[in-house]
Length: 197
Image 1 (cartoon, rainbow, N blue to C red):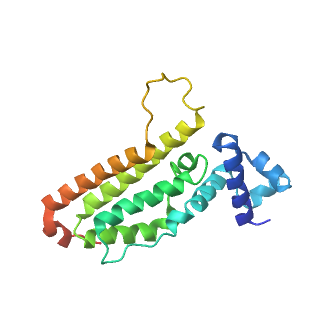
Image 2: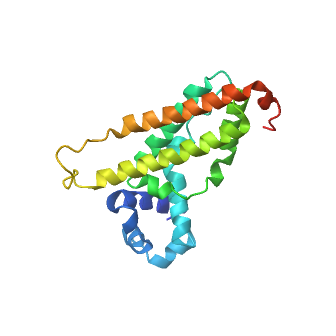
Image 3: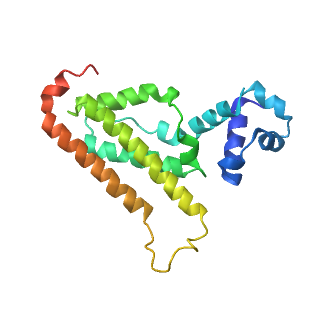
């Protein structure tokens, strides 16, 4: 048993029982080991959850970085679509991810920011838009995954509108992009030249 095996099994447990029911006791039983042996790899449950969150984000974390010739608007949209898809791959994926610090992803984040700035987006606006769109994406997926946990909306009135989660996500993401485009146009290239990135 190694660290990778523990994380893989923990993610399978997450898919089976949901985040609330994930425990080191259950994981140890699933692995066929005594609970204390897990502490060799993870000192606390929080450490385990952080490793699970990092592993769960692998599809998005391994997506190609933007190229200088890419259109920044199209890239911005696809970046957060990829983030959403990855969160949706796991049961409670958004809850698992929420509150984590992407320490292993800092170089990629810097490169994404540098791409936006070199494309003409002012640094401060790029930072705020990336933060806002990231939190927006997590919030959307939290709602979507909570919605799928409820039994077909059986307590809702018959005429209650059914939400198309993907369409709603796309509409909100487009609004964030639109705001970023307006700020970029207002600030112009002068603010980009002073950027330290």
